Length: 64
Image 1 (cartoon, rainbow, N blue to C red):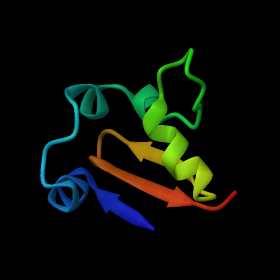
Image 2: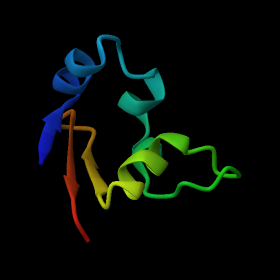
Image 3: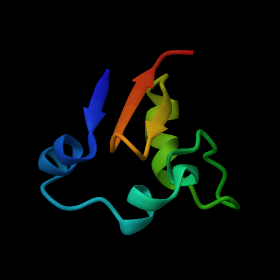
């Protein structure tokens, strides 16, 4: 499933953090506490991985 950043922000009812718009690492599929990517834990636990395009301002969630 593919979402633009704007679509995600509309679903959340608030903006994504600035780092989500600037750094592809924010969308990384690493959920360790050490890495600080706690947001990734949610999509990984749901069985998805993320592929982001900062240029297109969109993310695709897919099952590996």
